[in-house]
Length: 305
Image 1 (cartoon, rainbow, N blue to C red):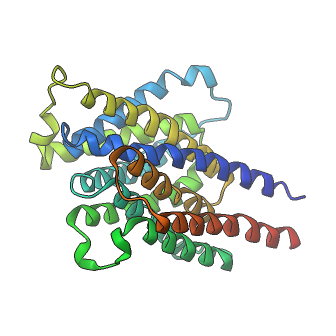
Image 2 (image 1 turned 120 degrees about the horizontal axis):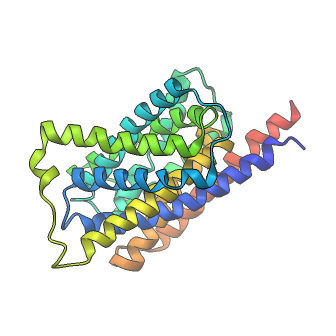
């Protein structure tokens, strides 16, 4: 059997674990907005993630030969798109629900193959079927009462949609970078530059938000939410994404990561008492069917050729 098959399944499983973690972080991200500004919270958690991983490098070691120019360029580019993707998502969470944020973020599942087309990357035809299933599933997950109406979309949803464009570019570029650069070093650099770029942006456009810190003596929530999102989402989930994308093509990776919307809905219901009904179960099933289609049929086609 072609080795690509088990590697692809391994990548999908790793990405699924990352999606569970991301789905759970929508809750602390939303709670954090009562204490932090979106820009401040996002920049600090990337700095924390970068510095934590910096101390882990000696444990893993670096075996491959380094191209510092390439590593720096990838780190800067990825950091830019990752930083603003996370910032717009965080900004959206000020006024939208955790469930809606999960849904609108998952729109990058459609944008990733479209961006791929512009780069001359043509996905297997079944990928488009999988994308449609994931989008329909996400609609069932994210739209209250089953009514898809533009007048129900608020400014927070718009910010999250803008963020999904940045997520899509990040997924495509990351698929190239992780095959060329050591993952742990690339992670440190992209997280550092994400924090740095957002800090520079804040200095010029929102210095008050950047420098106004919460009072940690009045509540443990600001620190706990920041640490969970820094360690859980950044250090663990984003690194798992990088490892998973080393084995899984970007289109399939985006489809698997759309399960983030499922876990966001589940945790939103479990912790914040957000809506959870039969539509969410059906939507979740459609997304998982899309994942199965995206993983099985393109690879069977490869094995026959």
